[in-house]
Amino acid sequence: MSSKENSSVDEATVNKMRHIFRKQVVAIRDARKTVKELSDNPVGSSLANFNLDKFWNDYSIIAQLISHNVTKLSVVLTSSSCPTSGVSGIQSIVDESHLALSNLVNLNASMPFNVGHQYCQYLSSTSQRIIDSLEDYFMVIFRKPLSASQAGSVGVVWESCCLDDVARTPKDYCTKVLRGQHELVLDAASELDDEVKTQRLMTNSHAVMSAIPEETWSRTQTERAEAVLAITNIVAEIVGKAADSNNTSDESWLGCSPSLLDTVVEAALLISSSVDDLVASTYSPIHAQPLQSLVTGVKEIISKLLNSIGEAGREAGSTWSNWADAEKLKLATACDNLSQKLHSDLTSTSDLPHLVQEQFTINEDNDQANNE
Image 1 (cartoon, one colour):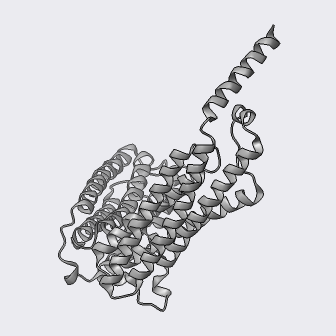
Image 2 (spheres, helix red, strand yellow):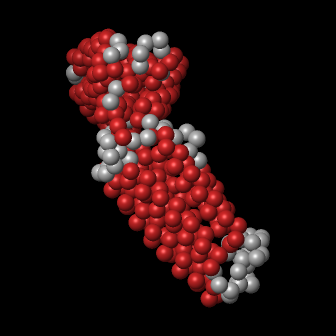
């Protein structure tokens, strides 16, 4: 059928369809609530008695069924043969979709309680993405049951049900998170490196530039940016090395327990945002004390990451604990260098507020004289 609605279907039939779709939307919302509750309080058995491969194979089959049923329903609704009396065929397809949704919820409920909080959250987000797309689709066909405008929402369901890149173990998920964070930190470092090289860092406001020579302030900003860049590069090296631990000749630290992987992921998820804040601080003048706080924040997050990897290395019987200790020392040295620079800046610019106020007074006097 074309993009126009099938006018041959009577209003009573359309209303019956809407009733079916409305009930399904309610069921979908209940499913979302249950999945969210399960992510916070897993009720499955121990991981030792659980087959993750079978779990994800079953999960993939259910996702394919959901995608297939949406496609089948869309074809029926937009075809010229859409039933003009009775909606049993449509009800049958929706029932199949409801069964697949129930099976998806049951699978979420089977996830082991000791698989790790972060991995449970990951499973929940994967399921909720499918559920959200399914709700969007049924809301579209509830509003316009016979319109071809539903095609876009069908595509979203297909995309959410595609599990090609899903992390099927806590170890895979940990690696996935680290690699994602590594790419983000590399982007931040590359951007800052370009700014330093081309000397395009923003200088202070007009009033401050009038009070302190622009050359002096620009040099201070560039020196800070170079110190921040050194820290950012070290963070990128640390996260990159950790993410590629499976590809090294050493035994990987990823063979540790899910609980330790959980602490690594928890720290890793905070890395890019903290680095972004630190890098952003170099694009415009910032007092030394707030910048020091940002540096401390990055140092604490990476230290937590390295402590967890070190413990994981000891548990897995690898040498990664030695690497973690060495990287912590390297990062601490870079952070101390910036701290010393900031302390020096505080001393040399201690009269900055006075100079700024003095310059504002001069500007106001000049403006008043010009007006007279």
